[in-house]
Structures are given as structure tokens and as C-alpha cells.
Length: 284
Image 1 (cartoon, rainbow, N blue to C red):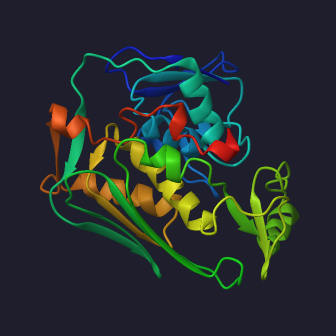
Image 2 (image 1 turned 60 degrees about the vertical axis):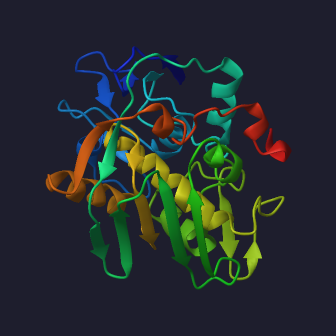
């Protein structure tokens, strides 16, 4: 997989190099997200899909990259270490160039909420992107975790980018019995069992699971087509619920508007001014 610079205003696109007989181009947008298990998948009108896009989308948003062409020779973005940090590190090593083009954002005008049982996802008006998340698992090693973070500037890179995807050993056993996640290892996910962390080296943060959920949320919100000016609140939410939230937002013309960001707003967007020093030093 290779991430290429994009033309100003083109947005984020995936190109399947292994597809010859149909349209290989797949946009990274909320309205082409299709049902999938445990990840976010986008699919074009020809049925060509790319899955597990949430981590690279979070890395792009967290580095203020809004135009890029991502070429890959299969239907899934590499999981790498289960976090967004390898992508972020590669972007910063390559260098980021500030474009002299208008930045258009999606401003949330009123609260919008969706639910699925006990799970809730909500967007509320705010001057800049903020994410508040709560998770609750019966496993003692995870338990209940909450965190709120203002995503301005390099906060994503510093606080969330190295947090890895996680699962419980019982879920691993179920998935493998169903023929899923066969390539998963203790090196690309944090695995919990009761009060134990099974992955070598333990946790990168005491609350790494909720941080990863926030990472996922940023990646899924990046499918809005531009930065979001609003507050996202997730309680046990996942990929599907966040996409439902975006669909509910854009279905209500009174709930949002597109705005051109002035210098003061641009300066508070995720990723503006990010540099290698923002990377968690122990993970570089």
C-alpha cells in the first residue's frame, strides 16, 4: 500500500491496483460505507470495496491530510501494529506541505443522536472537534473507562495515535471458530482475558482501550468529507453506530452547514502544526 499526495480539493480516495475489469476507485466518504464486521468498509457502485480503513483515516485526519490517493493491491488496509502510529510516523517522515487552498468544514448546528440498545453516539455543537467516549466491559482488565479530549493541533498524535485495537480472548476464539481474524496475533491487537493482558509488553496506556475507541471514532468521522466542528460523544459506540450518526446528521439540513474556515479556526483543527516531536517517544 502506498499513500500518494492528492490534488487540492480531491479528498481521500482508494485505488485497487488488483482490479482491472471494473472501476478501481473508491471514495473515503460516509455514504459509501457498507455493512461489515468489526471494521469500516467502503464500496463503490461497481462493488469494489476496501476494508479496515479506520486507522489510516484517523492518521490522515490527525495529520490534517485532506487530499490523498491510497493505492493498494487488495481489499484491506494493512493492520500493522493495530494502531495509527505507523501511518502517522510515515507521513511525518515524508514531510507535510501546507496547501494554499480554502479549508471547508462541517459545522454541527444542533444535537443529533443515534442509539443501538445501550450504545449511544451523538454530535453536539462546539467550536472545534472534541471527542468524549465511555466503554464498559465485564473483563476486569478493561472495566469502565472514560476520556474526553480536545483534538486541536497535535493532540491526536500525542494522545491517541499509538493506541491499539483490542479484543477479549473469548472473542478471538469465537472469530477463529467462524473463520474470521485468522491473521490476528498478539502483535497487532491487545488481547484481554479476565484480569490479564495477554499481549507481550502490556499496555501502552492504562486506558488504551478507550483511547483506541476514540481513534476509531476520529477515523470514522473523517468520512464526513471535511473536518467536523462539533463534539462527538460515544457510549459503547462502534463503527456502524458512528456511520449511522453521520447519516442522521446529513439527512437533517437544519443540523449542519458547510463553512469555510478562517485562520483562527484552521489553527485549531486536528493535525495543524503537528511534527515528529508529537509522536509518543517510546513508540517511535
